[in-house]
Image (tube, rainbow over all chains, first blue to last red):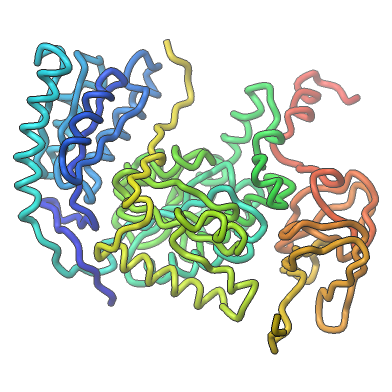
Length: 389
Length: 109
């Protein structure tokens, strides 16, 4: 079995990074969180416009997503910044859940600290001390079975479904075959692949769950009085030659490989420990989707793109791959892997999958993605379904 | 430019039942001849951008459009072999707000 060098957390989970996370509990804590992260070496701020005046189901999603992000094994410690008190999503409640992993968590409340400047000072001191503590942790060899591997695609074109996605499927299979787990998301983009999914589901009930989730998204879109055409496929998809949501879906589905489908999981929900593929209920929105995958505890994600992409999750390294040579050349600064020899050379899908696997392993061992170096943090957005109230 | 020994694929037809293939050769313009499989060629009727689909079989209005051996939509007009297949001549059958609205009103047009 393959191994990589990871950070073993108190709860036994394994991180591939040792990030100090400055987590904003609510929109009004965002600037303080950013100010603190900017002043601390290697700290990352996660900010968002939510946590306040949301309908209950959405507030729960926000809460669980923030908690899951803090629990992600790539995070070594967390400072939660709160503005005052947001019922149902307080810093205390967020910290209480994250602390169950055994990692260090601290809270700073802007109101209780007498404003943003004092809160910044308090948070900086806590962050500095926590960073020092985290910096003494070292990597150790762990089995690939510890990996929860994220699969996503975006700005897809027709090369995605023929090249980079099936190659990514091989990579996912290699991880699952060693006892690991993968998450496929973007349920909207499974529309048209229902029969294949039923064939791969471990039980008929799992197949029914996934198909019901796909149908639910279709009905939700229709209930809005709108048409899926016009938003799916997207404008960049159509430029790339994709003509319908079915075509986009069947291409997107290729990245799931051939592992058995163990179950449907909610947005941000942790899958069970059983090796295999899980399908997460997320929309096709790239950042919302990978945010849910990271909140479930995935340590690394491969993002397959046709047109090229800058996306990166702030605490889950996001490896961008393409098999479209024009896109790689145009977007080389933010793309990790060029697989265009699938079409322009003699690269088989299997060998391309092995290249992705090697890149994933190097990234797990500590090699930085381009986006990590550039501090591109566009890949965090919490899914919501209701209105602000 | 040196010519490579191995001949590169020009059109990617995934499944034998498919009536469309994906053009994976750049600069395919009207009048180009493309090889879709060993010994079988197609005369291109329109300029087709890299990565877009070409009809490799005759398609009648209303016919299913096949790729991956599965339906990706239906033809909204007759499509000749060699024509560009895209949103101007095929449509999705999923998430159709117009059909849903008709059903809600309880009648057919």
